[in-house]
Image 1 (cartoon, rainbow, N blue to C red):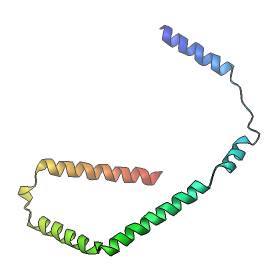
Image 2 (image 1 turned 180 degrees about the vertical axis):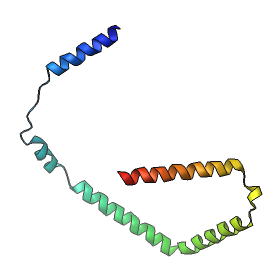
Image 3 (image 1 turned 135 degrees about the vertical axis):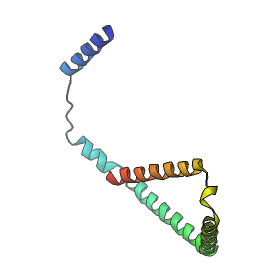
Image 4 (image 1 turned 180 degrees about the horizontal axis):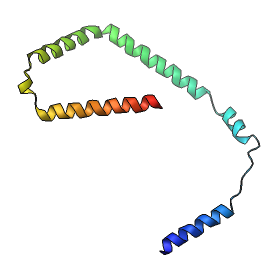
Length: 110
């Protein structure tokens, strides 16, 4: 009971003694002084990494590895019988896909 009364007294004290501090353009001046260089550096670094990734993909013929993987996966799927699929594996797969779909929907709403 005393905790509740103490909370009420503390809240009442702060409500009665609140003081507004004038901004006088301070926030705007601070925002204008923040470094824009870091943003530019990050964009350049991202571009360089993307170009390096594309170069590695082309140099090592990544499309060949992707087609082999795609072929192997489709061949395995076509030879797998439905009776061989574990219900646990199927359940985990459905849960993961559901979570990903919900996450994608929530992120698209923001």
